[in-house]
Every structure is written in C-alpha cells, then in structure tokens.
Image 1 (cartoon, one colour):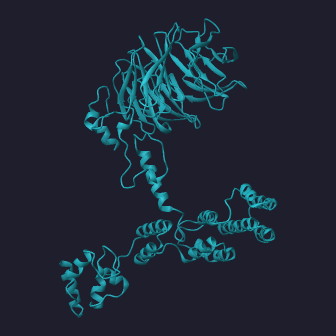
Image 2 (cartoon, rainbow, N blue to C red):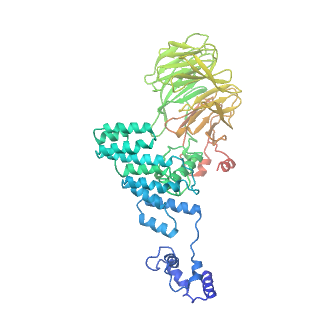
Length: 613
C-alpha cells in the first residue's frame, strides 16, 4: 500500500492523470493471472514497462519507478554464464528472453558471426571475421592482454581444419593449395606444416583420422576447434567453453580439499555431488572405531603391515611369530590364516613382496638373520645370514620382486636375491630403515647420522637427501615417491619433500621418545597420516594440517606401528606393546551422541572442532 500511494503521489506531482488503483493490479499478478504474455512471478506492470506498452499511466512519474536497475559487472557476468549454460542445453528461446530482459549480450556480435561461420565450415568468411575480432582482442578494455601473434595462431588453426576436411573429402588438390598457398606463407609452426604435409599420403579417411588423431569433419571437431580459438579471445568477446561448469567444478574441488575427513574416491563429475549443499564428510565414514581386537599374539606386537592388494595383514611379535590374517571382503573382519614360527629374537619388521607372494621378516638389533616366507604355502623359502655379527633389522623390496636390500646398525647394507645370495654390499653404512624407490635403482637409507641418503648399487654413488637434527627412528615413502614420512626421536612425525629436499610439516600431538614407531600414509590419494605414540594412542592428521584430526584410544601401552589398508580406505590396523592388534573401521552408529560416547575412541575436543570449522 505504501508503494501504491507513493506512486499516486508521484503521478499527481507531475500533473499526470490518476492511474487506476495499483493494489488490485499487483495482487492479480502475484496470483499468476496477469495479462497474457507476462512472465510468471513478475508483476505485469514490470512486464509492461519492459515492453514499452504500459497503458493508463502517464509517463515520467511511473516510468521512474519502473526504471530497470543497472546491473553490476559481476551480475552481468553471472547472467552471461547462465545464458551460456542454458544455450548448451538447447534452451535458446529462454536465453533470448534472458538477454532481452537483462539488457546483456551473451557474446559480441562479431564473435557470434565467427562462431557460426566456423560451425558451418565457411572458412573464408571465418578468416575475414578475424579482422573484426582483431580490434576487440587488443582493445584498451580487454581484461587479458593477448600475445601479439594470437591472430596468426587463430588463422593457422582455421586453415589446418580446412586442410584436414579437404583431405577427408578426397579433395587433394584443394588441400594442397591450402597447404602451399595459405598455410606455408604464414611462416608459422613449420614443424607442424611438415607433419600436415605427410597426411597427403593417407589412402583413406580412417587412415587420416588415425595418423592426425582427429575425429573427422563435423560438429565435434569444429566445437573443439572453437574451444582452442576462444583461448585467444577476451572473455568479454566470447566466453570460455562451459565456463559455469568449470567454476562449479573448481568450487566442489576446493570444498573437498578443505574437508578434513574426505576419504572417498575423487570424482570430477558434477553429477556425483549436490550443488545445493556445501560438501561435508562425517567422521563416521572414517576409521575411528575399534571394530575388532586381535589377541592371538602372547607378547608385545612390534609391527603390522597390510599386503599391497589389501587382502591380508601380517603382524610380527616379540613372541617369535608372524601371523597372517585374511581380510573378509564384505565385512572387513580379519580371520587368522596361518602362523609362521621360529623367529628366535622376535619380529620387529615385515615387508611384502610387490606381488604379495612373499613376506620377509626381520628381528631386533641382536638378530643376524632374516626369513623369507612364501605366504601362500606357508613354507620358508630362505633363511639368510651373512655373519653372526650382523644386525639385519630392516628390509625393502626392489620393484622387480626379484631382489631386496637389507641392513642394520652394525654397518651391514646388502642387496640379495630370493635365495639369499649376496649380489652387492655397501660398507660402513649403519642402517636404521630402508626404502626402494620405484625407479628400481635408488635405495633410500636412514642412518645413525640423523640423515636419509640415496644409494645406487649400479654405479656405487650416494647423495644426501634429508638431514634431521635428531635420530630418524623410521620412515616411509608415499606411493608417488615424492614425500617421506619420518618418525624422529623426541620430535615426532615430520613430512619431507624428497624432490625439493625440504621439510614440509611437523605434526603435533604424538609422544615420541627413543622407541621405534612406524607411521604411514593412508586414505584415498594418501591424504592422511597416522602414527602410533608412546602415550598409547593412535594419531591421525590430514596431510595439510599440523593438528591431529583424530586421536584413537584403546591400547594400554605404546603403539608401535600403524598400517592403513591401501585398498580399503576406511580400514586401519595398529600394533601395541599391550599384545593386541586393533582393527579400526567406520563407526556403525547413526546417532552423533552414540559416536561421541564410543568406548576406546577419543575424538577431538569441541574447541578444536570449532577451530577446524
């Protein structure tokens, strides 16, 4: 009513005739019964003012009320993005109406003409259009400064498509004329012109498509050509292809990157997510709940490791045994398969062969032997010992599965075959932990000088990669070979970039003295890090966050080792001096209060959760 009276007052002030009462007129539009042709949900007065046919109202007063709001640059950009997306869906009439009502244009008229000529294969006209676009490309209002030869590159792409289409149609003379008379005189990308000339020898279209890696004449290849051509045009002239989808995909990826608990396979498709809600992963999808406690060992459990295919778990104990467990594919429960006995000093380290057929077991410092077991048959293939004075406490498989390296703190560093035969040795290296890189040539070894060095047994060269200020008790390397995760005495867990040789991050929370504790990467894309601790807990961090996102309780003594299943990202195992192995999985509860009250699981404090959010 206030708006109506204000309008009447404005009309009377200008001396115009009194309009009919507006209240009734507006309510009928709101109820969807306005004049024919009015947009649903818009007052018909607004529609009339846009079409310029308002009747019964004098000009200036009501016209000022109905004056269209000037759109900001951001609002115009959004309208163009929406228009481009609708156009891609084939809703062309809707796009026309949107552009008409908003006063925007989807792209510059010269760009529209250019697009049509390209899609229709009118190459001479498209080439002429470049002259009009040239002025727009280098105008003072252009957002992005284009390369000086942009026009030349665009012309080359057009002529290349023209040439290929002539060849497909069997018009060899016309194609030759394009090559000699139009492409070559450009004096641009001569290497590519030599390649194009070779296509003249193609005997049939399929041969041409295969050699040129080109899908052939038609809408598909011309659309791809337009996508390339657009990169040389300012977005004010022609929008980048599928720009709205690109922005939405970037937003989804950013939300996933910020999600501390995201532990599912990355899918770049927008169809796999809802755009109506922000991306949030619950901690319930995370290995935070003790789903099984393995108590078959009768002494401290020093090590645990899932097989590469994720179907088995090997655990080594002070009780002189290695136990092989089978992971049930549906329930993810573990079942004892076999026990490997006879490791007199206990088992402090285990390594699966790349094909998971063999398992090597090492003992503590006083142990001079290692055992190579056939896991499938339970038979001991090799029991290796070079000298009773050796200390073979660590081992790593070569990616070829035919060799391994082993060593210890008494200065032994050997490369051996599956029969235990010594292939090469490196003198004077006091090895704490070992890792074979994927190139099959480089072996990483941490030593008693608080460093990790790279060794090549082929040419007997070595180089320093990591230098710490305190002893490196153990380390592991990410699947891509880029990152190393170190457990450093009295310091905790450190992340190093092996390529740049820099310390990336120090993770907080864990208690690390001089015990050997083994941490691991885990989850989809190895986005997470887990480690045992001398305070009886398992700590989990997101790779990018120094603060733990989860602390898992349940063990009653030091947690020596944590292993994350490489194929089941919601499954993790931890081995402890309390003689048990705990299997961690997602919480089976639906209620958040039940989750917070889980026995043996200590979530982050509420204050830390707020800080993370």
